[in-house]
Image 1: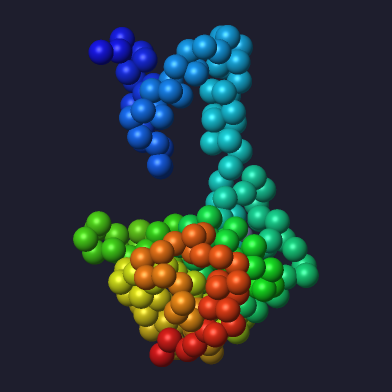
Image 2: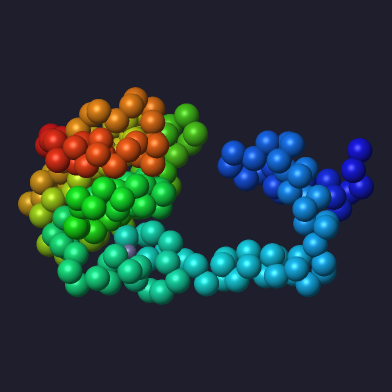
Length: 198
Ligand code: ZN
């Protein structure tokens, strides 16, 4: 129906989260309406971002320097680490303004159905941090799905030999919901009501 170059661009847009066929077609036609210079700016923005953004050496969040602004802020409490699934969840937690520790982004949760085990997410990096930086508490703030619970329990057992408190934020977050869909007050309360996992 569309010539191959247009179809290819539509396909690329369709891979984006939340973008259906209709929106993908609309975006492709928008790009076609641009001048060559404008289209190049768009393409360069994507490539520049990919070249300059990498994972923070401590928390594994996306950053353009060795350490992200949160990890390099001396006012943050480095004895507490809040473990989240995605970089989006860091933003959600930051909005509560209730957490002054550091984060650790797992980039997913363990999910046997999807073939994702402990080595496929950033668990090793977390245990290394806990040991190396004398961390006192690890707060699991994973979404309340079975995979999140399994991952939290796995990490709690892994950290059991070390002198660290492992907690989980309280329920009250809708089952199956993502942290960034929860309002700040609910999330702040869940953080306040956290409990030991083991
Ligand atoms: Zn960081």
